[in-house]
Image (cartoon, rainbow, N blue to C red):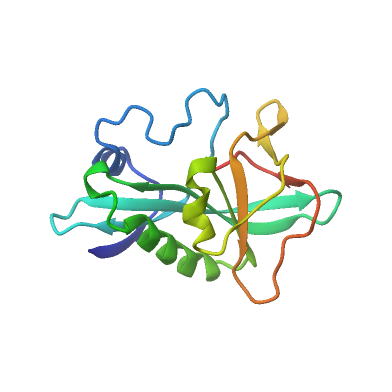
Length: 170
C-alpha cells in the first residue's frame, strides 16, 4: 500500500472508494450540511486505486465563552468495502494524525456515529460531553453524532464546557 496526499476528494476518487454504496457515511436523515475537507490522506492499493481515505481541515472552536481556538478536523474516514477488516482505517488514521500534528493546532476533533467511537478511542480520542453545537446556514444546532477530541501535543487539553464548532461539521 502506498500512502498519498491530495487536496479535495474528486468525484473519481470518491467513486473508487464508495463504489455503489448509497449512503456510505450513514449521514442521510441528519438534515445537516457538511463541510468539504481541504486535504486528504489515502492509501492506494497495488492496482493504483484508492482503498482508504480520510480528510483533514483547519477549523475553530469555542468552549463556553472562552477564546476561539484553532483545531484540526478529521472527517470522512472510509475504507472501500472490498478492503474492510484489514486494519486500513487504523492505518489511515495514524497517517492523518501524523500530518495533523504538523498543521499547527494543539487539538484534533472529529464527529462519528456511536458505534464507531471505539475505533477512535484506540487512537486516544475522548468523547466531548454533549451537547456539541455546530454551525449550519440558519445558526447553531446540536450535532447528533458523537464529538471526540485528542491532543496533538503534550499538555494540550480541551477545556471543560459546551463546545461550539464555528463552521459546518466535517
